[in-house]
Amino acid sequence: MNRLSRRAFTLAALSAMSALTAGAEAAPRHGGAPTAEMRGMWLATVLNRDWPSRPGLAPAVQRAQLLQQFDTAVRHGLNAVFFQVRPCADALWPSPYEPWSEYLTGTQGKNPGWDPLGTAVQEAHARGLQLHAWFNPYRVAGHTDLSRLAASHPARKHPDWVVAYDGKLFYNPGLPEVRAFVENAILDAVARYPVDGVHFDDYFYPYPVAGQTFDDSAAYAAYGKGFANRAAWRRNNINLLVQESAARVRQTRPTARFGISPFGVWRNVATDAHGSATHALQSYDDLYADTRTWVKSGWLDYICPQLYWNIGFAPADYAELVRWWAQVAQGTRVRLYVGEALYKAGDRTQPAAWRNPAELSQHLTLAKRYPQVGGHVFFAAKDVATDRIGAMARVLADHYTHPAPAPL
Image (tube, rainbow, N blue to C red; front, side):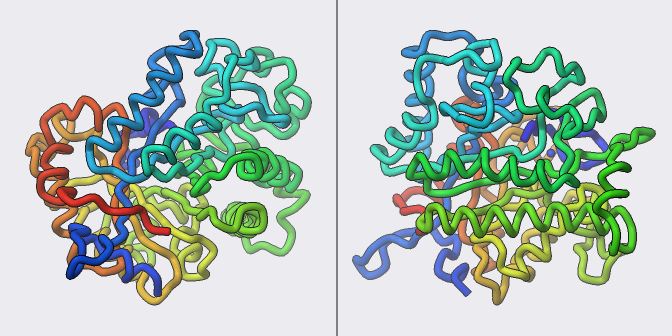
């Protein structure tokens, strides 16, 4: 998930069991065990956003930087790290399916000399942190030149699997062989390592760009019969990925939870009576991600919508979206966590609310009104560490004074 590439019109920048995990302060009840609550952070590797600080560092330096990230999480009262291990159809473990990530060595396919995912699982658990392996399903490259990929890259062997769009390369979600390959590549990591979760981000079909077309006409002609239109077929393609991945994760590692952090708006109420009182890009229509159905159908173990807006932001009000998602999750088996835009705190290009160190703390206070909200995940690790205006320190002081285990 490269949240660095958000477009302005998306309104995002670089954009049941749940009652048991209510977002209270997790203090022990009558001397008993503390209440479980998700307190997570995303650790992004795409473009070396959070880790490693640059490609080509010695293995010992990379490892030390990774451990520093986990220590930072612990110091800030967090209990889970969502570690991006497949940023661009590549791998941060010795995968038989895809090449080593270029973000490790600077050269895609080059062995970094150590196993980042294996180390991450071991070291996170040693610190009492959950480790959720975060995968981007379809992004292949931030350019359109297949020859720049490693010679062994599956996209070079199967150029018919790839669509060029917005100056980037993507696997075509409409091809059954692509879906099977993506699932196999992901499940390899799940089988190898005792991860606590398997996590997808918000990139399914790519974010729309005015005047450009995602050319999947051949796949639609071959596989789109029986659907009312291409949009319905595309949504079904993503639904199949979600359903199949969930089933295979549970079969491969029953203790791991499967969840997704989608764009925060499903549909606007002006489009659909079941939608939210927002005026924003719609994941259902623009990304072909029917996030509400995923929850209502119980396909996920948790959902963590990216509610990357401030309270009172008219096009997409945080308060409205927490209310809407809590209503969607109510009565389902799917736990609800809220994705928080820590990276916006102190950013003067954002609305004035983000210059207030208390904005994020107020998010957590507001979310406590809803028993369906079982915690929060912060984007992202670099911002937890730097804490530009003290927003994370305020969250810690106001809400995380008592340790809490992550939900099981």
